[in-house]
Length: 187
Picture 1 (spheres, rainbow, N blue to C red):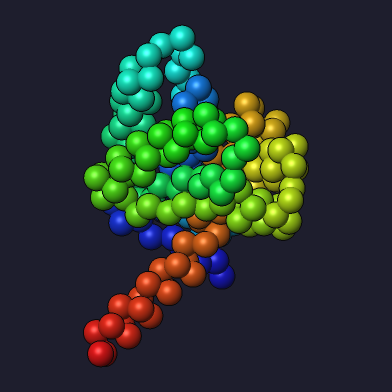
Picture 2: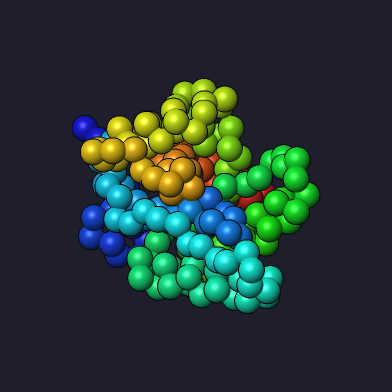
């Protein structure tokens, strides 16, 4: 017997999760629907792109509008965003942080559950090893979603992996939150 994932927003097919692999030039996204831990389908996969020749405020506004449109179209129950734990290039880290901030703020404003996972957490949940490479992540996303080919580009595969990671972790997070609330109410 498989555990069914309930949607807070009335999605008939179960829990809908938007995964985001943040970036300013390329921001991967994946919208997945989970009816159970093993019955998961991709509703949409892709990459939002902004032009590096455009001014930063314009690029951020464009990314804001695109993420807001995804939230309106799919009304996800949860939004999972890849959290950059370490980045050698400061400029890249700043742009990833800005893109991440937009996604987190819009999701929170929209009332979705919001979660962040490091790349190693995501790789561990998807491939069983936190040091998995891009090809291994793409292949596991392909297998888990029953796709005929690995998702391209890698940003979209990473976004799907983040959403899959959240689907795997969400039941445990819900139990933990319920236990904390029960403990706080008992005090």
